[in-house]
Image (cartoon, rainbow, N blue to C red; front, side, top):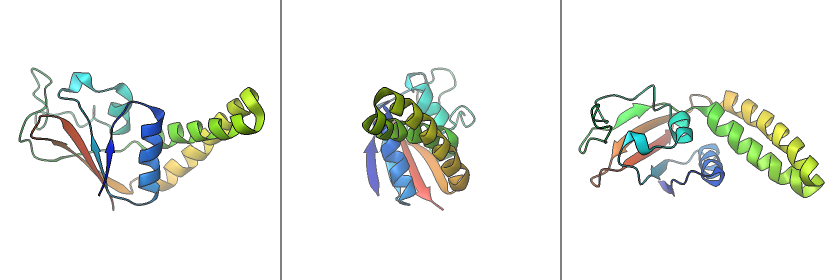
Length: 143
């Protein structure tokens, strides 16, 4: 199982996208101990707002519950693939055509990302787990 450390940067989402495209099992390790600490993009990518429950989050404090059983969550392919595609497109476009190329590449990359998201949708199962240190961890497996 491939382990990826979470950083709220485009490079993390690009690395995750590549691992999913390669059909790897992935474990994502985060430093976060409460729901309120989570970056919005992470919440959106793993559809955490839809799956927020007293099973893994203390509803009063927002802290993660030690010893909570693994809980299924979602994977927003649009969010993941469109951002990763736009970042890749911008890089290629900038190399070819400078700032204008970067803008065009961003748009084309986002379109490719949307198409890829439609094809990939539903191809993985995702669970959140709380480590013994109280931090959030994700496990992503291809179906």
